[in-house]
Figure 1 (spheres, rainbow, N blue to C red):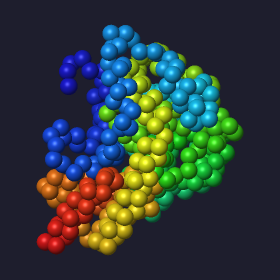
Figure 2 (cartoon, protein in one colour):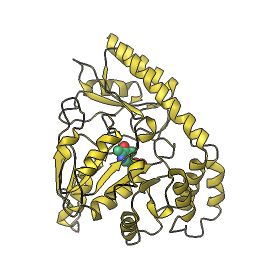
Figure 3 (cartoon, rainbow, N blue to C red):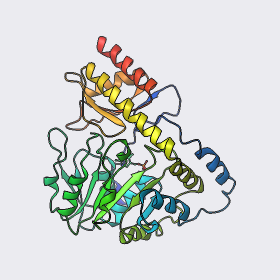
Figure 4 (cartoon, rainbow, N blue to C red):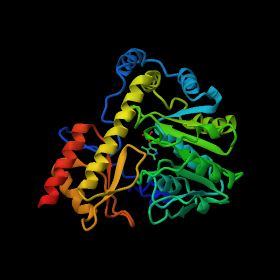
Length: 350
Ligand SMILES: *Cc1c(COP(=O)(O)O)cnc(C)c1O
C-alpha cells in the first residue's frame, strides 16, 4: 500500500477470481468458461476489425445493440452493452443503489466487493438450509435487490413466477436479475420487462457464448434505466467496448445454431456428470447452470480440492461458512468430465 491510497480503500478486499494458470495441461473446470471455442464466425470478424484498430470504436455500439434488440425482441434503447457484465454490475452498485443493496449470503462474490468499493450498505439475506432462495424473505426491502438466477455457486434457479413475486413485492425498488447462466436451462425474466419497470436483466457472453476472453456483457431494461447506465458509461469510459469485442459479440449472436448446439451439449454433459458423481457418493444440487455444486459427506472440500489440483484438475473451492465442504465444478467437455471422474475415483480409492 502506498502513502497515496485514499483511506476509504485501505480495507477493501478485492474479488479473487478463480486461478487462471497460463500454462496448458490442466483440466480447467474452475471458472465456468465454455469448453468450446467461439463460433467459427468470430475469428474472421475479429481479424477484419483488427485492421481498423487505428480508429476508436463506435461509442454507441449501434450495430451490436441492434443485434441484441433483434435477438431479445426489444428496442435498441432497452439494451446496453458493457465490458463484461461485471462492468455493468459495477455501474448498478455505483449509481442505482441510493438506499443500499440486498442479496443472498451465498451468491456471486463480486456483489459485496462492489458494495465496499462504492460505499453501498449491503443487507445480506441468508439462503435456506438447502440453499434455495425463499422469495418471501425478499418482500418490501426498500433497497436495490441483486439476484443471480441461476444462482452461483449453488446452480439453483428461481422460476419466473418467483422473480415476479420479488418485483411485485418491491415496487419502487430496482431488482437486478443477473442471468449469467440462464441459457443452461432456467427461465429468463425477459417477458417481465414489458410489465415491470423496476426490472433490470444483466447477462454475459462469457459462459454460453464462449467469449469469456472478449469481455462482453449486456443489460436489458426500461429506456430510463438504460439511459442511467449510459450516463455512468459516458462519464467513465465512452469506449468501454473495443472493436474486436463488438465484432466477436455480433458474430456470436448471429450464429444461432452454434449457440444452441453448445448449450445443449453442456446440459447433456451436466446430466451425465451429475449422475456419475452421484454414483461416487457425491450430493449435487439441481443445477441449471454450466457447473455442478457438490459435496461428499465425510470428505473435506479443501482436501478434495487440493488433491484434484495435484492431478491437474482445477475446480473451485471457497473457505466460507456453509460451503466449506462443497466444490463447484464447471461442466467441461465430455473428455474433461471423464478426466475429472477418473481423478475422483483414484482419490476416493486411497
Ligand atoms: C461469470 C459471472 C458474471 C461475470 O461475467 P463477465 O461478463 O465475464 O464479467 C456475472 N455474474 C455472475 C453470477 C457470474 O457467474
